[in-house]
Length: 397
Ligand SMILES: *Cc1c(COP(=O)(O)O)cnc(C)c1O
Image (cartoon, rainbow, N blue to C red):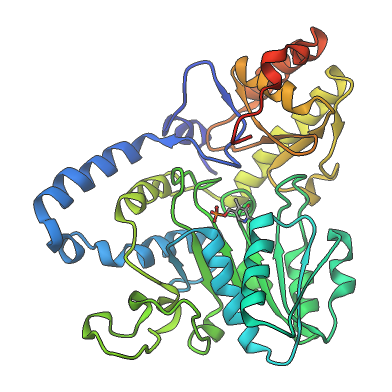
């Protein structure tokens, strides 16, 4: 059984703040400060360039990849860290498309995060002519999988509503039609139990600054099914994905397995922070996370619906069809969220009218949920969202 009172002590959260935005940026794990300071003062300062060998920097993308692998049901040596999620989406899609020459369609859905769609648009434009990005409603994905589809590119949990796709069923459907299945786990890794092996996913990608608490801009991960990893061609054929980077050969040869999805020099300071963040997951069972997350979010929904008329649930009501976030629609959602943040409850807003709340059992409990609803109720009752100061739009919402 996961000890959530222990995990809570591992995070540095400001006094009095209820943080319901760990789905967007996880809070600071206390150990990350020490780890980064150690990396800088003891490794970088003292070892200089020998740190690549002596401090094991060069192995960090694979070593931390193995720590992520445990949380997403992947075997060791099938996940590697680096770059940002957008880049990893591009890499996965480029390699996947080459596995299905002659098929014109990349299938995704309108609940996907825009960057995934933008990266696909950019890649397909480079490939030219014959490709089409087909974007259907989330409920229509299964029926849209046919023999024209080369790749399904689906994000398991919808960033706006929290709606959860059935990864296993859709992957099976994709495979039956002869398509390759890419899964984006941005809102899944550390949020819900994921089983990339059991679902037979071909590729999976995700970021580590959301539920995994790696820090702003923390490096992304990519998984390639071991049955494919030695067969795919990496489109971003950087030197660190080469079979022998330090042979400095003129021509590219892909490295073994997942190593070929590395691109350039890994961000060691950011990886040190992420490594420390991953310590918080030691001894954590994703089934316990799931049970607690459902308990917290069900209570939140019940309390908000009872005490805050005017807010309309935008997430699926069935917890089995939701990830670890809850969204409510409200016309003055932006202003209400600003008022809520001013009152110490941090969630976020997604246009046009969605207020998002993330539930992260590592550092949240029922008291946090009740405190958050009490403050929200107060804002709604006193119509604090009408204050002009809360209507000012910031760059990041
Ligand atoms: C958060 C998120 C991203 C962000 O990509 P970055 O390159 O890390 O900025 C991309 N896709 C999905 C599905 C996301 O949820």
